[in-house]
Amino acid sequence: MKKILLLFLYLSCFDAYSQKKDLSIEQSAVNFLGTDILPKERKVSSFRYDGKVILGFHDIESSKSTLWMLSFCKISENKNKERAGVQTSGINWVKKISSLEKQLQNHLIDTTFDYSNSKLTVPKVFTKVSKGKNRKIRYGKINHYWRKWRYDLFGSAHYITVYNAIEFDELYLVYINTHATHDPAGLSYYILLNKDGNVTDWCRTTWIS
Image 1 (cartoon, rainbow, N blue to C red):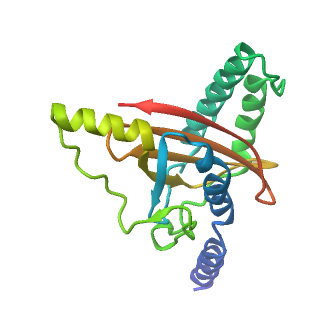
Image 2: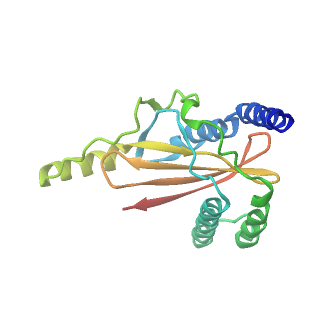
Image 3: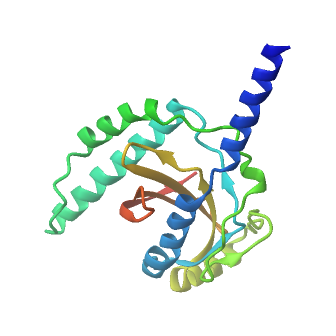
């Protein structure tokens, strides 16, 4: 009987702890996407978002994968800056990512938190949608050239998917992926924030399927 009571108390405390989790870091990343990144995206007319956060990083291995994608993104970004004669930060991203990778063991993700019942505040500069489903692409030569002219000139709308933050000793990493409404392509954003929720660095890359 005593063991049962102890187990009940443990589960109650764990449940209470998991419910205290908030999504302020993910919210800060989404706000930054709207205020600092969207205005600079020449070929993005708007971001469409339903407010959901997806539990995409539930173990160390999945976190490592995205962490190294950030490294490749920053290395590529630095090479482009060097070609353009722009000064880089001088950070050795391979060493930095290796250091962050070792910290993952100290910050295991709470997979008991119910992300499906939690939503972020959708920034006013985004288009709020109820479901993040892309419209069907209509093919055809005339429609293809019309879409290409229109999107090259005005940009296209992108649906965004926000994933749960990955925690380190002094930082968080939030990964946000987008999918264009008219093409099997999109953008990937890696946003680093400090413990106060302030953005310290970020990187962007493109993808196509």
